[in-house]
Amino acid sequence: MAKQTRVIRVSKIAVIGAGPYVKNIEEIVRALNEHRNEKLEIIGFIDSDETKAHEEFWGYKVLGGIEVLGDIAGPVGLISVISAGGRRRMFEKAKNYDVTFPNLIHPSAEVSPQAKLGKGNVIAQRTIIAPKVKVGDFNKINYSVAIGHHCRVGDYNTLNGLSHLTGMSTITNGCFVGPGAVIFNEVTIHPNVTVGANAVVRNDIPEGTTAVGVPARILPK
Ligand SMILES: CC(C)(COP(=O)(O)OP(=O)(O)OC[C@H]1O[C@@H](n2cnc3c(N)ncnc32)[C@H](O)[C@@H]1OP(=O)(O)O)[C@@H](O)C(=O)NCCC(=O)NCCS
Image (cartoon, rainbow, N blue to C red; front, side, top):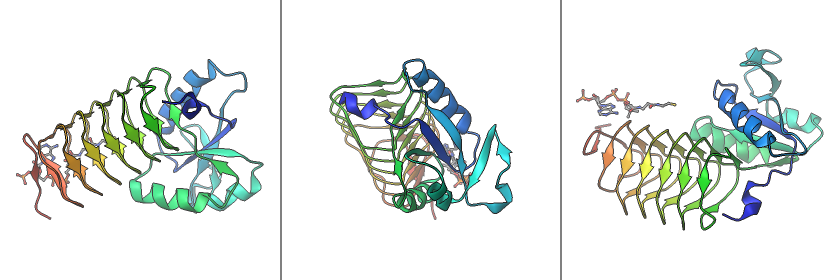
């Protein structure tokens, strides 16, 4: 991965969606700050739920909906791990403001210098991204995920802890891969698929379906 991909040029981070995962974002920021002169600071949540406005959740204030970015002296780095649809809508709206979309990568993650990352990805502790992998934008890649050589990961996916994409497999866009799932080599997971926890996926999975079990079967809609 180009060294540039890990550089975060802002000092303020806002988290879209008031949720408990902020505690892990906090942990990534803490670890990154050990190596930074200008410290990163989480300034609060962006959340349009008016009932949450100005309240604290998990230690951070809800600043307001996306339009509040207009009142904050930018640039602000935006992070989000909410559901794929919500993430897509919020990031689209956010482009109208003075924001950046940094990759927030825990220092214990191993990202090959031969891998390519887009923007706005969260990569948690101990994840491994092998050579020649391409990862797009706005993905949440949780703890100890293994992404094998030449895999493709598109945009707005959630890859849960200990899931394993074996070599040359593809996760397209908007997918949820449950914890511990294994995707066999060269398999393609089409858009908006849910893969259940611990599934073993040996064949391509069609768009918009849910696959569970060993070997994975597609649940009737
Ligand atoms: C895949 C998943 C989303 C399906 O949820 P759902 O659509 O509500 O499915 P249901 O619970 O109604 O189960 C439907 C069938 O699939 C089976 N099933 C569901 N999840 C399964 C799994 N992970 N492995 C094997 N079988 C599973 C159920 O036993 C049931 O089988 P049956 O029809 O023979 O009785 C869910 O089970 C799952 O694995 N979620 C992962 C959750 C998670 O890890 N979240 C992390 C958040 S950080």
